[in-house]
View 1 (cartoon, rainbow, N blue to C red):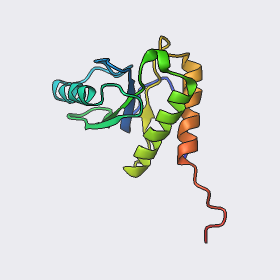
View 2 (cartoon, rainbow, N blue to C red; view 1 turned 135 degrees about the vertical axis):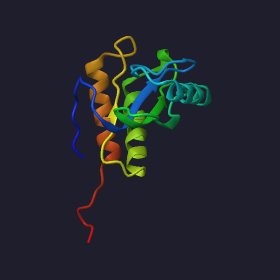
View 3 (cartoon, rainbow, N blue to C red; view 1 turned 60 degrees about the vertical axis):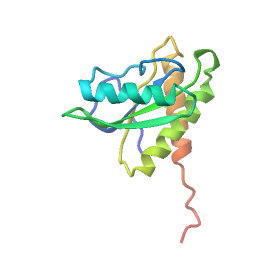
Length: 138
């Protein structure tokens, strides 16, 4: 799978964002229409930002993305580089499970963790989770 890091919005099948524990907001998520916003708020209540919990919401209307995936990252004090590595791995596996050709992950803002560092951890986690050893496959 090809991984590209870019700073501009892109049309995608799945837009993934992170949420802190006990937060009512997905970090970096663009403005949404009323129906999608309501669905996102309901999902936020369900997952409560707990580390590793995922929720997928279909997007309504003509957006740059078909679905939104919300991933809980736990409490801000407990976040490490491994947190982003593990959770981005779970996101990548979920995207593979849904048979998606591409997905986008919103890099969290700097108050959570350094953006360059978190970008590297996100890419590393996704690559490790999507790796398949097929050398001896017939």
